[in-house]
Structure formats: structure tokens, C-alpha cells
Length: 282
Image (cartoon, rainbow, N blue to C red; front, side, top):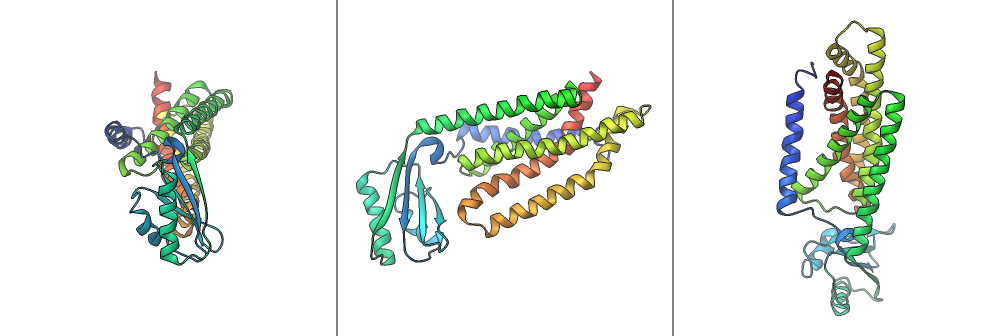
């Protein structure tokens, strides 16, 4: 496969997803979770195992958008997170609904309210962390390779973040603190694949200096393709299994990782190298 000749196709696929995502973010915004916009968190001890669907039937009366996860080995406790600022009376009504539905003998619950200012702080720290990580990568790759490699790698990372944001906006997936953790994880994962391919390009440039840059890139990606796909596929299978059989608290982290791994592998193979080729040509 000639990656360079088909680069516009790869660029086009990414641009379509990102543009649709930006339009969705502009029209209805991201579906921010309680960690960002504030709300109420409620933990209730049921005393017996129950499904999320059973809890959902009760919560739909109060908030159809509330998230519900299990806690505890026996799966007999639930945590409900809602963007609504429930009053104490409303919290009592919710707990009483569960007490009546599941014949709970001893009412045990904890409630906590979150301010939107906490969400602003999370956003600020996430942005600072991402900028520090990107700046550190820029310095390292420039020192280890050259500036053009570093710029191409950072653009590929920006591509991965935009793809993840777009997917969340398009499908209305709640964005919470786990989403931030996933983004920082993907930044490290994606840059690893990109550096492996860049290292192969550098080695091929030394060995076959008379070949064109386009040939060197295509040959390097071809030699790295099996390794990159196998590594990503192995990781992806593990994360998908976690998402399928894991508890809700694990699923909220596994889902953005799935999208991030796919986007990171795609950008390492089809975005970063063509961008470097363009920068090198200029």
C-alpha cells in the first residue's frame, strides 16, 4: 500500500469524523458528567444483588440521564450520579423508592453534592497535564530525532484527541473524569506506536539513503505494520473484554480506551508519516 499517494483518503476519513463531531459539539455540546457540571451523587446499600436495569426503572422517575454503577463484591450497592441538584427531600424520595421496591430493612445511604467549579478545575488540570505531556514529547522527539518528526507526532496526537471528542459528541457518551484519564493514557500509547514507525523510517533513511522519502516511508510502514497491528489488536481485545464483562466503573474507562486505541493506531500508520513527509518536503 502506498500510504503517501493515498494520504488524502486517510485525511478525508479523519476530517469527516472531526467535522461531524465539531458540529455536534457546537449544536448540543458534549454530554458532560457530574465531574464537570456538578450535580448529586448518591450511594445506596441495597443488601441484595440487583441489575442496573432494575435500578434504572426507579431512577427514570427522577432523572432518565442519571448514571448507575455497582460497587462492592456482592454487587449489592449502587452509586447514582445525576447532573441534577436534588434537594434533601428528593434524595429521601429516591432512597425510599429503593427501600420499598427491594424491601430493605435498614436504610443505608450516602449523598454528596458537586459544584460546577470542581468541573472547571478538572478541565483546567487536564488541559495543563496534556500541554505538559505534549511539550515533553516535543522536546524528547526533537532531541531523539528531528523537529519535523516531533511536530508530526504532536499533530497526530491532536488528531487522536479530536477523534475521541468527536466520537463522544456524535454518540452522546457521558464525558467524566475517567475520560480525562483515558485521554492521557492514549497520548502515551499513541506516541509509542508513532515513535516505533519514525525510528524505522530513520533507520531506512540511513540504510537506503538513495531511495526517495516516499519509498522509505512506505517500506518502513510495511515492515512495522504487523508489529503495530498485533500490539494494538492484543491491547484492544483485552480492553473490549473488560468492557463486556467488567462492572460499570470499569466500563466508563474501557470505552474511551477502545476509541483511543483505534484512533492512535490509525494516526500512527496513516497520519503521522504523511504529515512528516509533507514537512520534510517543505
